[in-house]
Image (cartoon, rainbow, N blue to C red):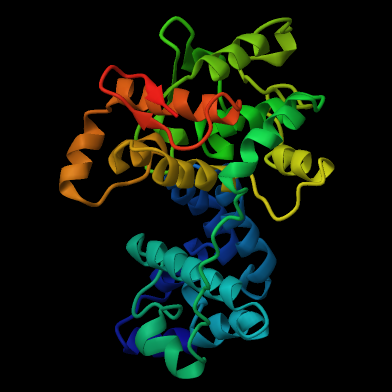
Length: 335
């Protein structure tokens, strides 16, 4: 009966049946697509979060064929978490939308994306709660010289990873995934490849004498099992856990401070206590610079000027310099 109706409507029943059979389920398609999507993320944690949100929150449509998902199905996924977990719900909606967009591009779907916000889901839901920007809790830079000796007295590899993170003003993921071939000991430069940088641009870190000595100490007594990671983890071929440095702070009873916050400590110190140009400090943090003049300056790398800044920071952290640090023409600093 249904076959005759389709035939009268000019639809080939066999072709229609074949198309339905080739359309994958939502989960099967998502698992195939997500590895491609997450290549744009440098942080492994963010990559894993993509798949986790789909597996955890999209269960009602896991087994639904991708071409059979409409507004009711998407709304059914979002309603249980829309008000209780607004940020997560907004993220899930966006990820469903991207997956369905890809399915349309591959010919598995047609028509309007049922996960789109404007003109589709917006009339059915309250506006998403806007995320409150929270800055990473930072240790006041005045306290860093008092903290560093205590950190150096802590045992284990994680405190050393945190020390390098502080001295180099790097992100925790950049430090933890550091590999020995990235370090040019003779030139005292650590080159972080673009795939591990937030901005996807290679970043050269000039190492202060303190940071260089730390790296050298980590190269002593290594075993084959350690591999290339400067900070090898418990599992062979893996670096330290991304929670290792946070746990170090917790064990040291340092409250209200995050690992990432030490970058803010460095930036506040550079702005308040030194006369180094703003663009030098921003380049040291590998920040994306929107101003065209500053961006041109950033492209020039300014490695030697950044070296003076990083050495001044390390000397300050060591308690060798107090008060304001003013760079002089000959490259030395006055405190």
